[in-house]
Length: 278
Length: 320
Image (cartoon, rainbow over all chains, first blue to last red):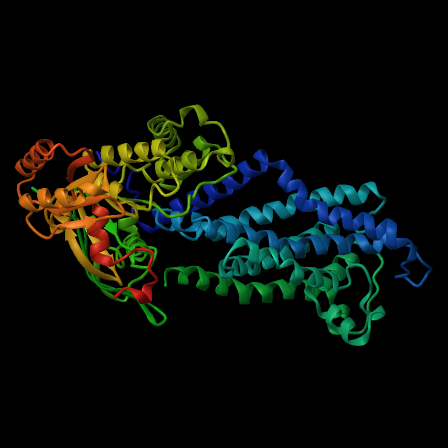
């Protein structure tokens, strides 16, 4: 009495149907995690919240980003940066989740099953994107609570959030690639050393033109800065821009940077995944 | 009628400049349990990974359930179960949620996945823990859950890579019962193990592998038979009796008598075990010698294994 599994039909339509079914199952698993361990989820938000409080209340009073005196409009300047930084750090969660699934043998188990192998990667991407949406919602409410406001129209505000999700979506592919490259979860943990400057050497907390020239140039070209500046414009928050191209064309840069990242890292991740069998 | 369910011929696999498999052959008949034995690094896991479509091979061919593992991987995956070396269960989910998840990924519908989950939870003694998160489980419970997950399909072929490593005796017994039960129902099982008692007890055939090549392919009994005859063994109570005991053993021996003075033990291979044992016991009694132990020892699979591959804990270079 072996093989109780129904053998699904092999037509193209059948395969597409089952592949979508598999994606849904994996995303459902992520949601069960969320319901089971809301604390884990809360912790990933802990960092940006602590940063908000630190920068707005501890350092913020000494910050003069608008040229109108220390502390003036700093919440309005820093909050969009905080949104962008949270999206930027998100790729570490993706990398760790992928490395964990690989190390624990979960990836192998699924690859040995009739499940669509891509479910491991695509399922991850969908659930992380949804996660990012929830992250943003919570941060948005906190921002409102401490007095930040979007001065833009509803459409501009929604557009800003779309740009943020777009950045996170692109960075997920870097996370997937790194997670598959890593030997173990500990290795991805040390990524923080990489992620921290990536998030901070940007226009998130300080305008790049206040930094030393070479560092300012890096910060100005950082994809995180592009998104931060673009959403400041859309939210109608103070913008402190220098003369570099991405600062002058923040909206275009905020669309193009994630596109470029996706074009590079999506194929890298897919290739890495296929090479697991080598 | 026997049919072949797993068949590999001339399998070769290189990782950079080391050959993990070097012309390995493997055959498992339907409904039998095949044990893959060998020291660490011999190629056991590589073989399992190839047969479960996880790894591509460089040379030879391999078929599982009648399908080529390289060209028809999707067909193979519908008919196999795999329990790898790590316990691949989701710690955050409950035992039941885990099995339902894998059931769905095996593309069972919700009802069917639930039924299979409940049945396997009962079979593996996890019914009471069904609604507890796996992260609180003991190593043995997790391993059982892991095994249950690989049996959701009641697969045609089940691959187990060191299934009882880290389990307590009760846990091992449960795994053994489950494996035997599946084999009785027609599932072909391929398992790798370091435990020779496990191979002895479960396997119909044992393939010994080393350096990616076949050393021996035989039944457990046949492997032991290669080790030669049973041995008569007497342990002296008093070292002074050793010479007398040596003479007694020599009278019935079929080969050289081995005397271990430190262990007070005299032993030798014998051809007809029962008459030899009776004769030795009578002689001991007649000469009024008190002995600590007197008996027959059958060669164990451990001895057969050591004989074949050398000491398993020796470094690889030292074995040749």
